[in-house]
Amino acid sequence: MAGPIPWHLLPDTAAVNADGRLSIGGCDLLDLAREFGTPLFVYDELHLRARCRAASTQFPNNASYATKAFLCGAMARLAHEEGMHLDVATAGELFVALHAGVPGADIIFHGNNKSVAELRMALGARVGRIIVDSFDELDRLDALHAETGVRPCVLLRVTPGVEAHTHEYIATGQDDSKFGFTVSSGLAEIAVKRALQSPSVELVGIHAHIGSQVFRLDSFARSVAVLAEFSRPYDLAELSIGGGLGVAYVEGEEAPTIGQWGAAMRAACAAQGITARIAVEPGRSIVAAAAVTLYTVGTIKELAGIRTYLAVDGGMSDNPRPVLYGSGYEAFLPRAVLAPRSRPVTVVGKHCESGDLLIRDGWVPADAAVGDILATPVTGAYGHSMGSNYQKVQRPPVVFVSNGDARLVVRRETLDDLVRFEV
Ligand SMILES: *Cc1c(COP(=O)(O)O)cnc(C)c1O
Image: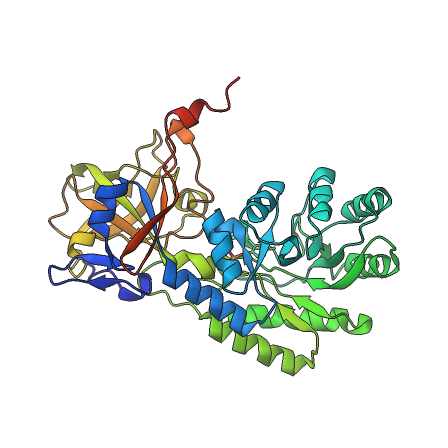
């Protein structure tokens, strides 16, 4: 037995009307499902703007939105309008950010294996920063400097040897990592010395990203301490601690706010006597709780004494996180948002795999029925962006809602889209 959906998992402008129906951004969710179909990603625009503004207020001029969490032109423009820079890690993300009108100078380019073509594109766009990840990349930048004459501002990514207390697949700060130059092995020191003497790059700072879905501010503080100690002899202007601030997905979870993150980082810097600028790259904490996904319930299969399977018209193709990381989610019925959820269900998708589940142990109101619209909150990060066309499903549309207005920013894919690349 579970109570109503915990209110703190819903977007900022969530409101319930006299009939118990949920609206976001002044738009009734059932109306949105009818107008745009399901599955549907609904983003609360004011929530997105508030999180971007929180980041750019806490870390003025030094907060970059990590676009891999969720990217489309509208999102790129929104984050940039609210004072954030954009963090991209592939030619594709760079293209979408530039296409949206974000100036190259406000883009930082990441990646542990950037190709020569990607680096050439980044130099051509005059990106503000390149975060260099390897000696091979320094070699490539030497060659590209000879070719183009461009001398980019770079940060070196280091692995600080900090355990982030998160899922193994998204922990990136430990020594055994494919990312960056390891501090403890001495590679980071060699890299800094090389970059400082290099005519082809201008070294402006050090970067570390310890992982994602990190709840403990002391993990970030330890990263700051390692970065401070490591960089002290070089007097560099910038220290980037990456992204990774966690969010609450299910009942009982609570995550620090962006404001608390900022305060903790200022305290950590003060404790270390750091005068360098602290930069951050939040992704999940900007977008995750801003969105809910709407599905239509298609079948309910009751297995007495075993479990009840509630199948929706999406699944691992719009939210692969449960399959990838065993992530937990909650569900609710937008038509009865205040109803207690007394019926235990396993929410599964429509794909031909038993692993295709969205919620292993979920709860819905007792009268949940075929045809109902079911919503999963906190699906704004790493859902749409990690989504796929598996089994040739058409990826869902994205709407931004605000002040009673629903703006379609990514349309639903069509059947024709599925054969667009065939020659
Ligand atoms: C993924 C990533 C981020 C964003 O992580 P979140 O957990 O979404 O905040 C920031 N920086 C780098 C280098 C990343 O790889």
